[in-house]
Length: 482
Image 1: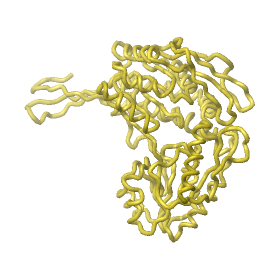
Image 2: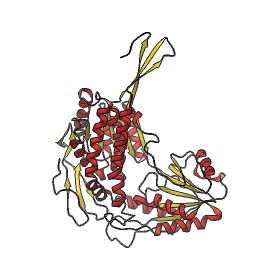
Image 3: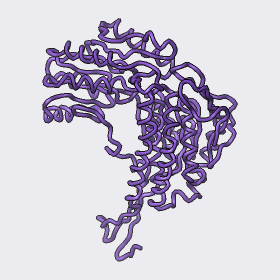
Image 4: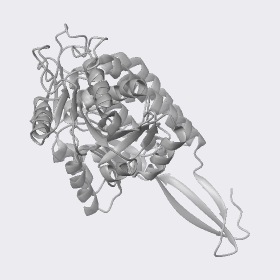
């Protein structure tokens, strides 16, 4: 598989273009019905690095038909767990071989610093696939239970749901995509991937790896385009389940579209993280870790720390520590290994961050660090890591390198300040007393929570069951089961 234009991506000095005019369906590239394309601009240089089809209804139909045929008549759903696991291991090897190119390409697509991209777009997808390969090997498609309502037994059969549409976000495109594609493929589903428009190009590298891993035709399919393509997939009667990660406004439309054909949908929507600093915390260690959580990937992470609740008696100390952490970040060329803050994904996204900071200061927030575009680099959609001294929590933190520090007097105020999770997708608490931190974590209603750190765990819980359908087969005694 190859794109029109020059070869694999290189560093900043290399001029290259990846121009795709095809979708990937049924094991091959097919000319897209759509005449329009989406262009991908490098957010660090503002130069066009590639293009992909702005798919329309006929392209979606082609991809769904290929996935449907592969599921209804192909070998993949009927393959044994060990056979599917072996295929996932082959795919892991194929992605491992392409990891350097994938990391560079994603950095060019959306500006993630190369050191971070190597980890999240090169190494993480490989680890995800190997994890689900191991789960596939341990999968028991049939289980016999003693019946409760009659004298006999019940066989519980676990079979793949069917055709799965996976709509991936742009901020961690390969890791997020494989977090759903891995369990779907392990379960025996056939899949259609719709990457975010900004990171469409890396989807073709994944298709190339699928070919190298010798998956049956139609097991993996790829369509590119704007959010409307995701809605077409969600409404399509040939799709059995949908996974979506992205903005809440789009997620609501996806959920409504799935309701029209009564299919399950799994949503991971916008939102960010809140951190709680208790009065006994080691501020030096907490600020260093929170600086990484707040500003890595330019704050464009769903579990990134956007709000820090600090005890009033240590408020200025906490504010100064976080401001120092922000100032220590290295803004620059995302292809450079020492860069820790790259550009935001687009000029529109930077404008959103700027508007949020302006509105916050107009309401009385005080700038403790950042709050503007850096003097250098001159080109690119950069914005300084920003720390705000704010009086109250925000129900809708911005998806960028901005953290607000909010004072509290008593621990009982924390729950009230954050409300019912405070819009937090995740959270953390920082304290010298582990039991105290764990007790607070149990009281709050946010998503995953860390004590003196935050590191997501793939298996807490895994997503395999989301792509399996359980059905019962009733067996009166003394039926034999082979």
